[in-house]
Length: 231
Image (cartoon, rainbow, N blue to C red; front, top):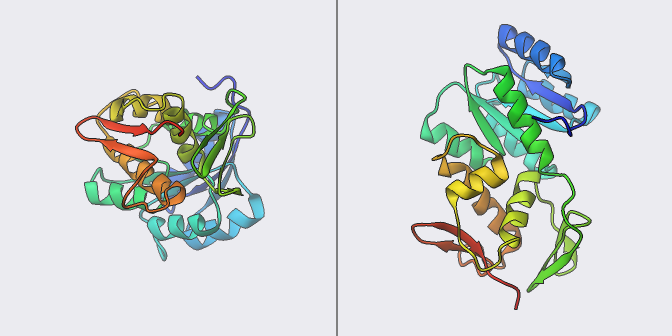
């Protein structure tokens, strides 16, 4: 897996010395360039200096926690973020995803799993087939990998963009959450619909005129979601 993905620059924000050192070493061996930070404040400072391709962010940090770090990054940047959480609690996961994270992994982290998730996220930004389709005020340009609304480019994360691209490949067709998990997140396991629902919510906030009454990305009750075909 990941043979077609170039070496990536990662920012690892983890306060536990042993975990940080272990992950830094393991990810370097997997072909990544890793910059490590031991706190949220340090991580935010390094973000501006290093300009990484992806951020691996621990939730439990001294000072400002991972949720707040994620929120601050999302105010100005759409870089991919993978959260590391010590517990698989619904609240922790949901808060992290609503803060703007693209994916999450529960500790203890297996480096090979983390590497696979990193490469999956980075593949979401690869170019697609060359065509452009308008859905009302929203235009998806696959060649440029951009989405515009009323002529202005929307700032989407790679995951949000890939989700929209996958839905737009099958306009009018309902896709289940399990299908979307496989297509967008490349997850081998199924059942974690929180990833899909949180990403749809964030995407609607950007593409819909009234996110609470979506006209483009429709919920198909008991199934999943569909993108209404262009008029």
